[in-house]
Image: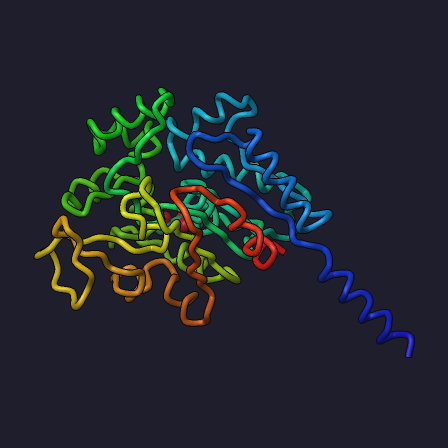
Length: 303
Ligand SMILES: *[C@@H]1O[C@H](CO)[C@@H](O)[C@H](O)[C@H]1NC(C)=O
């Protein structure tokens, strides 16, 4: 009789210990900003004892913030993977939560590295299929304004694609040929180029327990907002798709399931979806106005 009791109490102990959590901050933020530290603290309120690591590209707060605008994303993801793999508390796997661009960067980690493996991947307002405009900056945010201007000016130039973070997920459906030719990040993690599709990416993404995609109801920074749910635009006449919602601009929005990326399962999304592994959630508000929308999500998926 003793053994089952011990076994049960072990089980309840195990389920009470939350998996470690890795955070990747959004654009304009840094790993150890006041906001990120407060968020980590609030998570600890929900999951006492949880181990949390906030990904940084530079230990200096200002330089880390700058790395959100300037740098080579492929190198940044590789550096993050190295950092993560060196943390003993993460060695048995972890949940990951990305804010805005941090979400697609964590997805790149899953597809390319995933060692140690991610259990649930939670992304808030991320740009999974890119953006076709560069979001509006705050009036006093010079760093953002300079990056925005430079990004819009020569978004597909080799320099921009090496050095401007936002350029590396800029995908204008009206100019896909230039995007395919120039882009080395988003084309890669979405396995868009038929000659360099990597089946490891698909296998790793499909190995997630749950992919939680959160879109903001009043999103104006991410264009199109549906990018957070893996929706993407096509320009009318480009491809003959069925009954999709036609946007004012003459562009047509395709949901995740209406795209070749999903239908031909280039990155494992379909496999994941067909076993019920993708959650589409909404938070009320404009980009990253999370309010208390995070709490139930963290309670359920970051445990
Ligand atoms: C596919 O991705 C894996 C993981 O990043 C990498 O090790 C491998 O070299 C890639 N394969 C090709 C053909 O590029």
